[in-house]
Length: 251
Image (cartoon, rainbow, N blue to C red; front, side, top):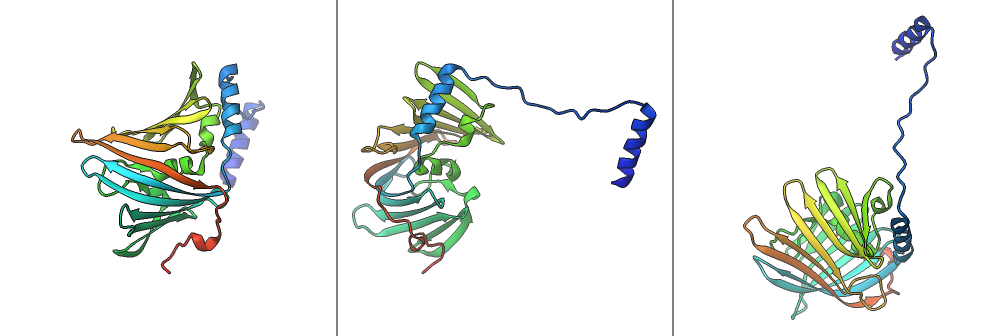
């Protein structure tokens, strides 16, 4: 390193001139009044609840049709979640999932427990299907938050007739968020390999920021349409989010 510095200094001296460090600055992006106002309204609206629990029905259609009851406990303060899935009519526990500290812990009657990295975890629904959305995107819907990238100046946005579309580009992935009346109503996710998942957030559950239902749709490589639908049935804004309710190991 010393040799490089000395050589560079010698070149400056021989040239007999002064160098100025060149800074590369990104061009300033000026938002239109409509886009700026809409982003402000979305920010004001989407304030994550600190802790809540909810019950729902999850249903998948396609190569296999399945339905189950589910419950969730969401702690946005400590960034953790707990899911329990039960057989629809008999109430038998099918699986339990805890997400905390960027890890996923899954237990079921057939397994004592398995630990995964959250970065490798995908939404797959019940049984075999091709709905492979990264859970890091899906969890934003349950934390009731909007990705910070939506608000960055460099993000491509279009605002027409009260509808704001924000396009996010990640390595090998592409996401389009569609807002209507300040609320997220659609999320379109695609991969470079051609995989596409369209998510619709319909209605409003009670007086919450949760939709009445979240429905994901895709088409398999064989042309088979597949879907996963979560329909909310109850919501408790006063739920407890103590550590014991988010186990990350078998008891």
